[in-house]
Image (tube, rainbow, N blue to C red; front, side, top):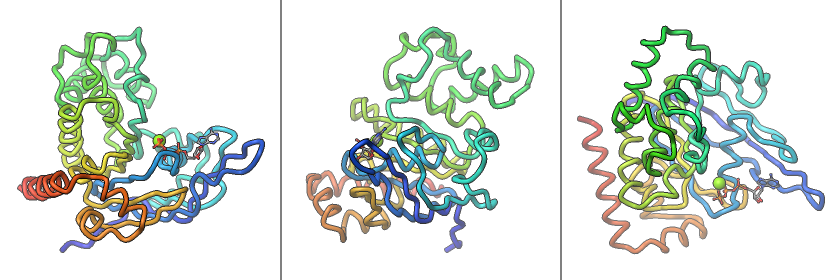
Length: 282
Ligand SMILES: Nc1ncnc2c1ncn2[C@@H]1O[C@H](COP(=O)(O)OP(=O)(O)OP(=O)(O)O)[C@@H](O)[C@H]1O
Ligand SMILES: [Mg+2]
């Protein structure tokens, strides 16, 4: 087997929130390597620090929160946690990007879809001529399974699933190496969820990017992720292949997470995942 190359090496990440009564250690000494081209799932109960961890990697923690320690080094030696915020603007979107929790509500309601995508690209320094940038928007829309005509519509004219696809297209417009996706499908029905995860998998393979997917739904995790990490009270308590997490969970919290999924669904999802693996090799 080819040796896996590390894309992002997170060591001892600490993120604290200083509230009036106490300091909350939302992320407490988390170390994790994300490999190039891998689909990594991060699961764990509500409040365990998943979103905080992703926001820290993008330097988007707001007061009273702060990064209290640690490093997160990309393959070129860049430490995401110590770069100046000015330098960071370039890294965000171009190397690391995020599809935020509830992303579809982040679209601008009074701007046509294509125009918002063009604006995002312009803001990140794309000076291409109008027709070239329009063609790029069309290509992006098609790559997330939407019709080109969607670009002329306003967000309220789209379904939730379509909006979420637009957010994914927007997130990948600068060909990032790492896509952070925070529960990108949690507000959608299960069929649409599954389709969007398939789209994300296809895109990830096409771009050769790595994806760090946060979610509660262990079924969806089994469908998507090659490796899974479990967060519990700010700690990363277990990291293993998806198969081992489902068949040989070690930590008591992982065990309880897995046992909450009906066994037939687990089997079905794992089989689906191995089918995906076969098809992705073709
Ligand atoms: N702005 C804030 N001020 C104070 N505490 C915060 C703030 N944001 C998050 N926290 C705390 O940090 C911890 C982790 O929150 P976080 O949002 O990362 O959890 P999560 O794992 O993403 O949960 P969910 O699955 O519900 O999205 C929680 O204890 C939360 O109360
Ligand atoms: Mg969250």
